[in-house]
Length: 566
Image (tube, rainbow, N blue to C red; front, top):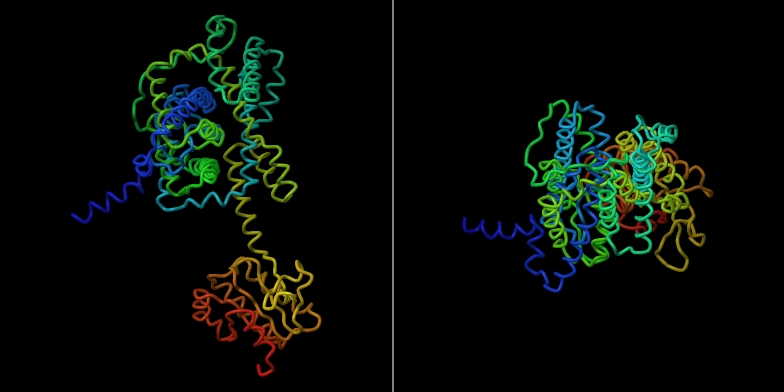
């Protein structure tokens, strides 16, 4: 018993990272963190009300999200600047997923949404505890950017009816856009004026006064104008009554069949949220020179989502734009998020009546302005310039979001990323090495280094990827082709497996067949850099009965190949 206490005490900072920085918190940071907290509160309040509307939930759902996500991430996260709250991408995913289940009423919709957020949080926590923080590496950057770009277009089109004062259309984004164009004659000019002026003000403030909380200013002015001119009596839809007080903590009641139908979307939402959050968090960790723990980040974001789900809030993630504002305002620790959480609590307890006269067209303007930053045209151009093949994969994902739906597009994006990974791994480039005249003992690819000189009679081949079951046959065929094309003819092939720490059964069988085929052509096969674990399997599988010439480096291998005694 006496030995377990110190161990538990030592483990607490690992489980709750806030215990690492709170004891050493510098008083000089307090002013900056407080200012940053007020700043992101001013940014988050209008955004969360807007994202709640985007998710098809009541405005207070966005505010309830902040009560859980900001504080829980501040305690359990490892980033000092990351702001975890509702995001546009997660709001769209939530809306598209829950709508597809055809809920019977708003209460059923809210219950399904809460179940989805809880399932997403559970996925995060399990993945973090299983140390799966590497999973976002399987979603390529161009595919992710294409998906987010498509989401931005999807969101923008979905908000046009609110901006023009029209009824919402049905179907995919193209049909919804066609619906808006076809009904432009029924536009509410007063609604359009409010929305267009708000959108123009947001972009103007961003450009000419970037340090001001533009969203909060536009929201405040819109409420004052709406109240003073009684815009709701002139055809301008407003938010209406938002309940004051703390939300109840409850587990949503949904049918088992509906819950299981939410699971694939929860997994997809986890992938999208974590990709965005890890990218944002890592950017500022690099900037301020500290280490981010991806597995702990999963746990922290998972807890934030579980808390939000119990409060009937939105799915929470880390946003690059919100985090950039936090860092720009001088945040030095997660105390800024704690300050923002306290201010959000005050908002929920006392300030919600202020939003009654907020025009919905202003919410549409806030959403369109927020997602406009996700339409990274310059980035897509860069992808096209660097590697057109990956650019077109991103474009395929983008078009899928617009023409199909969000979840099918996400599945397509993930599948294409994995297929691209397998495609590349299954076709590794085979480098033929030659000696560098000016660097004795050094060897380089003769294609990339024209001064590298092939050794007569010896073919030195190095696969530029680990040898495994998906590429073993391609490597075998490639080496045999190189042998048949070599002039003058070769008497020895040296296969450099330095990229392999391990080797699988399929690869062993392929190498055995290669050795037999070369032997029939009176060509010897030597293997260089067969590392310990790979050598152990090669010995157990019988490869070393066919290839006995294993060499620790190229110098020994070439000396063996040139020795007439062998």
